[in-house]
Amino acid sequence: MSTPPAPAGVIRGTVRDAAGAPVAGARVAFADGPVPLPDVAAVTGGDGRFALTAPAGGTYTLVCRGDGGTATARVRVTTAPAARPEDVRADLRLG
Image (tube, rainbow, N blue to C red; front, top):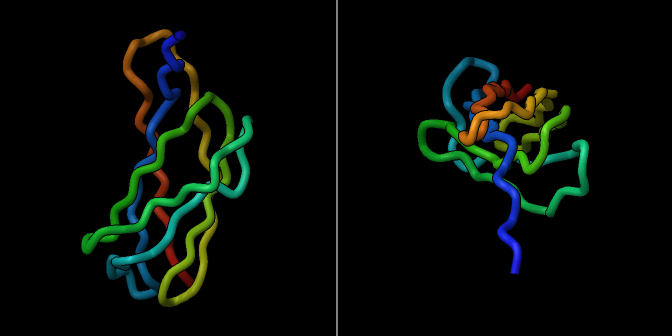
């Protein structure tokens, strides 16, 4: 049995409402990416933070739905020769 490849990166961010307050319970998911993606989502904690694992390098589109509206963001995850996945920041503001 082969070992699955290490993820290329982790996309971390915060979801905020239109006034700038953190949004708890918002759902953040991949809408598009460089490889087929599982139908998974991160749910923000009380501080509005989330994290999603990016399986490969490339550009990802995130979509967020929560009280107060929706938001999208595009982020680029690069594949570095390092053994540690890249951390990428994606902050979303609902509107």
